[in-house]
Image 1 (cartoon, rainbow, N blue to C red):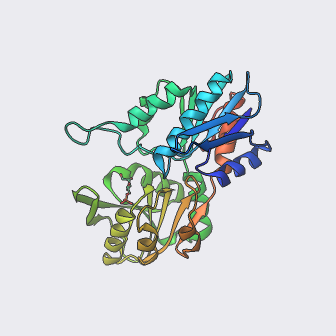
Image 2: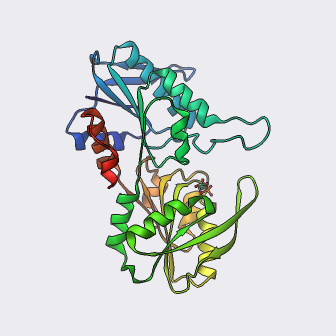
Length: 310
Ligand code: R5P
């Protein structure tokens, strides 16, 4: 078993390597002066079971290209099996035609990953589960839920806890959290009037006097969560916090969230923390390195991955 870290999230790759008690395989990833990327694997990988760790987060296209080029190098170096480990799968939100003459970029990216040489994919909280079907190779989709649930149990007395889905599409996830935590469930009925702007309409469920926890897969601009927080407070919530697996946090998201009514926003380290995130007293990051490391070990040893979530 060998682990290669591309450049998107070195701290996570190092933490995974530490969990597995394995060194990262020596590799050089550099740019030509026109920004083409070049990868050279500096150890023999012939016949090896290789895992390439790369989130296709900002800058999404550069990080995606690094992943593809690294896998091509491994394939040509005769690796026995290549697993693309994508803690964050960028482009996942483009999972259907949003209008006439628009792409399904998640499918295109799945094709690129496969053609570049991946034999399997390991990822976390895919935006839409059906993206697994965009691949004709095995996909293991891990859940951050156990990591989040443990943290919520440690932080809250669940007497007045309500798990909240920020939109109708996320009800399944919020319900799973509510079930594990024996908490109530509420749903935000969100209407998006135009692309990029999210608007909250109303809260389904009674949140008066409740500690509300919003759960989502992605927080990007923060608009969805901040609007939901306003609606919850207006409906009498005692406090509002949020747990979102992937902290994309683009544009002014960190300051928007920091100046909102959230007691905290908890993300995982699927995307590397920026300095702005690190200094914000509202933002917290939990590591998913042991979860990903354990899944990699089980894949390598041909053991069940799903039993991690029993
Ligand atoms: C939407 O379907 C997703 O689950 C997230 O709610 C959305 O991507 C968050 O985006 P933003 O933070 O920009 O509102």
